[in-house]
Image 1 (spheres, rainbow, N blue to C red):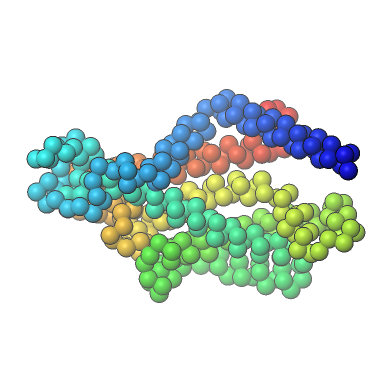
Image 2 (cartoon, one colour):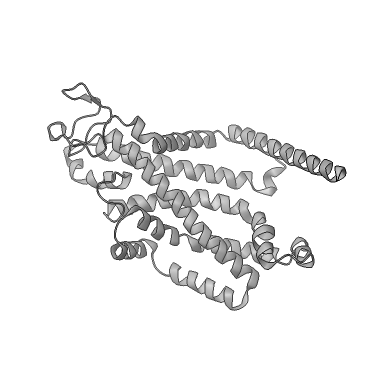
Length: 307
């Protein structure tokens, strides 16, 4: 009993040492690359805006004041309040709506990836492990979905289901599953005949245990990279659908709906209505892409010895 306890403590200490070593390596490589640090800072600032938007926002996002409509950035109201980024056509504060819009963009982006990733990972594991007709059915369903432009499918389903955050998350999530399924299927096909999987079968592990406890942990690294890229694409899709009026309800501020509302004011040189939400979308999407690119290099075993 004492020997087993001592062995368990040694194993735990070894894992903690490996984790600390990998964490130090990740910090060192990120600092050396520089751009991922800036991307991480931008994403952390966006996350803070999303989490604490109501506390940071100077106004209610739907408070209208037609007297102060289309106020320039840094304009002051009669009560001394400052519109740091100006106001829109209904006199609503642009900064406040940007802060609230960050919450919708991150919520939709991350939740849709969780939905699509879960469906795709399970489908890919089943397809790659069992093969045969299971593989044929799952892959043909993926081929059928890929045969249609995603934005058209999203518009069709949102017209049928109606606008709303959860409907939007469901539609965008279902649209992502094929990517995960194909990657997981390819990795599972190569892993299911490996020695450690055969050893798990010989020890009497159940099929569920082999799939989710033996194979899945060995394919999480590429999935993490794919998820970081897909968050960016989902945020763009949400902005596009909100721009078309098919995203969340009009009462909920989003970056895409703010862009849509700025169309009629561009000719009047009210540049801030389009620039600020556009810059927010560009910086967030670019940051996710930079971080995903860094993760891909960091998790690549061929580059591990160089770092």
